[in-house]
Length: 321
Length: 279
Image (tube, rainbow over all chains, first blue to last red; front, side, top):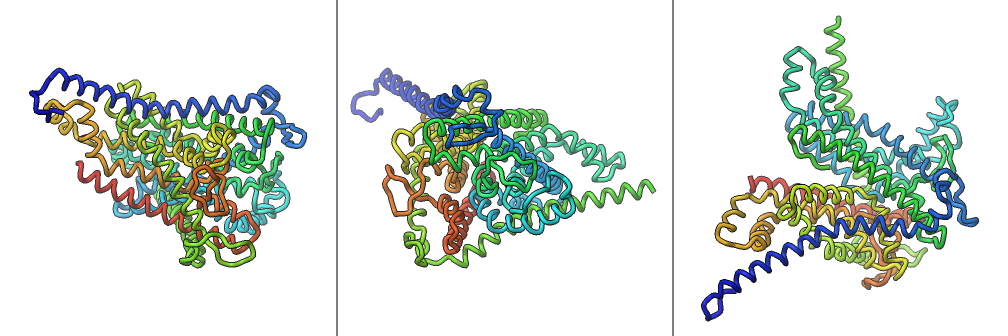
């Protein structure tokens, strides 16, 4: 700028520098605004594209269990039921194990194996969803059909949950694959939350003569409860929105059946298997499923982040989900 | 008596949490190991250098899908990396505390949006009007990458020592020069990490591509036509009844998982090195 042969005109230089700042500020602001714009556009586009379905079915969309593209009758209840059932099942399986792993990694494991063990658990998170689907379809589903469903059917067949044909694929399979997929995220966040519990708390309990487990159970876990709850809710958000593996394992059937052995559908799997071939009201109804899924996952994520955030500011650490 | 019960409870619970860890790590080896065994047994050089053979013939490969994934991720990077870094710079250098909190929150919310919803969004925004295309697939992946790049870039910039900025500012350097020539270049390992993480995430995504890039059985490099991608190949081949296509799905899964693991290992290495340097 100042390399001209004339003496430097400081007014011009100053102006240029100021412009530079304004332009740069504008550019980075634009980058930041793309995040806002994407979210706003997402809500707007999904809402406007599902207007047909919203006006046509109204609230009945959530209470009707008919999904019939031929007669243009669409109700989301089977998909909502499948989403809730598979996600709850996934949480029931994954939460105890994840918290156990987190306790192991943060409280029990000897120093040298903590980092490699965490790394190995988190490697599961790097496997793409569709690969879990492939593994689930060819390796897990046959094992679920026999022995798992056979044993459950033999011993607990009197329960409505375990009635019906043993197919391998179905809500049980979807719940199990989801449990494996959300295990690393719940583990990673819970472990960070446990580490944020101050040492003094543990030392006080140990000094009173508590065993290691008593310290963990009555001091460390209660202290970390909000954060662990946040981790679990975040895992739930992941499970609710998970698509590929579930689509490949749930069997894609629009029916509500209390038995875990029966095929079903989730919001995400309905979209994945049907949006491509739809048009008109059919398409609008599927996009409304997307809108519902967006609303639910955003609410879940907000709740989870508020909880995790509260404990991390409380404990003075900086935790990232 | 009571003492003994407490000791036994302690031992049992310690064993239980250790067993949990063993189960988790065992699952990881089981899944990754199975993919490796199945994938490697089919993998050969022609698999990655040839396009699909007509059904019924043996052989054929996934060159079209490898090229397709590279193109899709390339488009996504071209869109998301500049915007994401800009957003990260804004968050760390310009935003006031309240704006920062809101924007961070929005970025985290966008990260939490299921990838299938991103796919529906881009389908409704672009594909309904122009048809399936590689470009729309790239845009969908960019939406997924954007918040990841933005948040990691922001975190990376916090690692740059204040003294460096202050020294430059004291010399009369305008703020934009301080940021663009000092802060951003000093934070490259961590920013690269964010981009690698985002690439790893995007390359493995299937759901956003189902109604945008769609997949293609033929070799294509046009951004206006449907394009193949490795995750779509796995999904579609797995659902066919042909054993040879199942084998190809395993081999593709192996390539994809190997890529993910290498990227995440590199990421960790860069992070540990970068953190060491800056402290």
